[in-house]
Length: 486
Image (tube, rainbow, N blue to C red):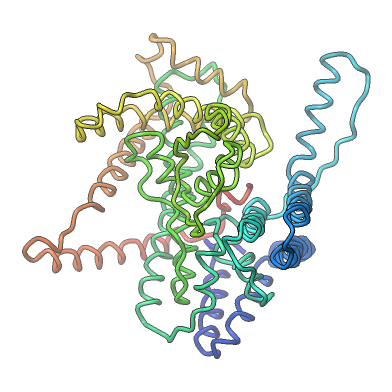
């Protein structure tokens, strides 16, 4: 069941109506059951796999909480990690591992071959696995008291708005939201509906209409590209994946909102970032904060003392006398983060690419920060194209295609010709201006101006009417969301 389908809108309307009609104690069971049904629309057999992962961490977390000795607690945590990560490895990385073992054997003429098994990747397995892992770790760290109500915990893991592609929720953020007894408020429906409409607009009107251009461009022979072609394709895919994933996040946040449940934001105009550190505080915020708290800081050897596990993104430099090498931690974290997105070396390269520029950025003297506007504007001019070019390995089919496209950028003669359609360049320019202008307008408080509130209301009314009309025209489940494959 895709978000960009009439079926989902009918399903959401039915669940929302029942939610507000039921007594508070029955709502959790409704949400849990609805989430199972939602996932079952894809594959009922994989519902059992999701529930298995959910049950593992439910019972292990209770056992960890009741255990006083450190060694048994740690062993229980390891059992949880091994079981969860084993499921992820088997379904997501087994074919990748087998292929690389066979390639290595062939390269060294070792004479053996591992049989490859093609398995269907369970929808959303990377996301719900990360959620159950973070839950168990938070209980182990004594940041969280485990939930005894299985259905409430199960809803936290399987809640359908964010089940397939996030945001990656923390139990400390949403468990209280699920427990809160709330009365019906029309503002929930209006504000949530606006977010859903915005998400559908980003997905079906923008992302889905950019996709054919990007797909056709990456199918061409690299030898036919010019440097301008490479830049245009990088920017177009950068806009496509932003609209696609931010659109999903808007819909997820909106679906929760209409039931009075608050989700943390997952995007904050990332293409206005003036540093690479700032970019990862704006892009896929729930993932970057998860990676920081459950991978990067533990690799550094930093003990997490904060009991409030919040989804605020970014990988800050954390160095103290007990810290291990921050450089090693940075590159290892980003390589793992890249492979989390997909079982392909292109994703590992994508991660290392970001790690390299974050590493370089750490050597910029802090004294430049005194020139705030100039520093931020200059930083934006540098960060934006480098960030957009990072999407090449993310979209490319192989490292060979990735490196071949990058090499085009170092040939100055290839900046004086253009082989794609002129419309593609025009579309890129329009999208670029639209993203920048919308980001800047979001910072303007029109209420502070005379008649500002009136113009803001009029502008929003026109905006949502236009978006509704366009969504009505383009709404068709022709393509799933990009992050569904992760």
